Image (cartoon, rainbow, N blue to C red; front, side, top):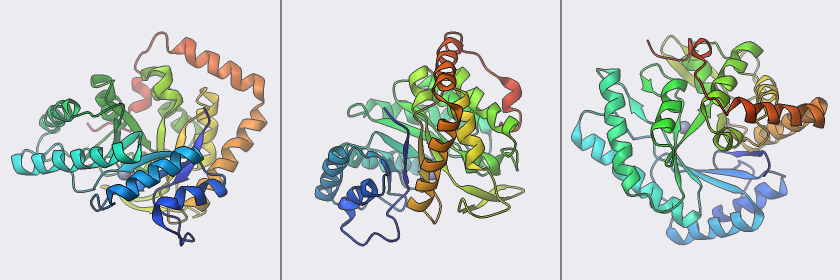
Length: 310
Ligand SMILES: [Zn+2]
């Protein structure tokens, strides 16, 4: 098992047929691809099948991002049911294309946070019943303060549905949601240690991340920025260092920037440069420490103070 890097959607320079994009990514030395169904699941079944087949041949990890128009926290029965149906449809296509994770934005708090979280859990219960195979629902940390998806909530959804829900860590969203508290090495280490303290070894080791730099206002996310854009955070180098220092050696990073595959390549090269500088002995020690640490999971409340909604 290896660390994985890839784009969210088709690279700009790629002009071929869409299912064959994985061959292109492989030729660039990338090994992950998040298929974007964010404006609806439009891919034909035969193309989904071809994409899955080529991904298997080239060893590219496929994940699928479900439509944006989903609110699993809605008190409106019709909106809730439509949201659940959109996820069912994404799960169906995910199975055809062999996608390991269906990435979902949980939704909005609306009136009451407590009520919204309860409604989401009910929806997850319903969705779990329709599980087709080994696929996982990935609930993402979100960038707006009105959106369900603090780090703590996302970890808790996983802990309540360990066989079905996995956490998706969108680092840019955490920077926006915390209004600029994902900048120093210490702030980033607090997030990473919350992950390794609360997740099982396997889930922490294979953590699926979205990455971009982020612009925000008082209410959180405004827009994503490329990794080369100055004046925006987080810095990938600090995140990669933090992961490796905590023994996480095979995460997946999906570039959600306009530079797509170019930023995925940048992340891959940075990750391996840092890994090489740390040396094999130190990496192995960190992995052992991670396992020992995980025999007694516990919350790290201090680390989450900026990332929870109060
Ligand atoms: Zn997303």
